Image (cartoon, rainbow, N blue to C red):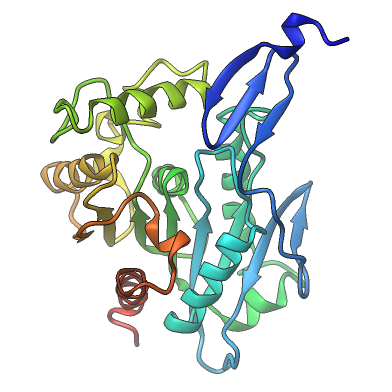
Length: 307
């Protein structure tokens, strides 16, 4: 018979994830996997899924997007149907190459492990420019002077933190797309202190400590990027922040954009707010008009000034 300690629930975030006293983890979503159709690239146990357009032209190099999936650092994978389908659509719309990063998930692998895994894949991508042999899809089809990072929710958080670290030998990070990014902070911003969003902020702060219990709190620069002394020193040229009106993280997206503008960073900032929609709505209803519009906006951003 299981002991009371074994049955004890120590973390509970319905309807997403539950952790028991014996370390057992129940994930209530994001468990399905799309089998690899050709080849998931692997390196030291890490993996990524690669996407190329249907008819790539080796004589016209394509932009490269490194994508970090979301779901709170602990749900979904780069191989889940949700992200497989979304990135297939984005590749077709934008005519780009995508590397979808898979990272080990919390709570079995607490932060900073997902950051470190993501960084290892970023370095591997950059190394393909000069590698002997290497990944054919990247070497033949990618313009390494046109590299982008993107992610949604926790993946947006990862994308930003990779951009803070980035030094790509021979490759150039041009821009970043943050879709409903998971950021926080000790003090409320925007409407976070209002009745309508105070609960959402509390949950976001609590969840941060769940996935990163050794963090110094909500003002950790990994969670509240505007307090990072390196915030204004990122090397990319432009950023698109996407927010949704009913998303409890909306104010953090706006705050990121506004504070980046005040920081002295010299790049181009864009923001897109979708009315009447909630967090990552585009992943759950990808064919709705607003999701299609968001997809097209991201594709346009990735191809602006395309030579």
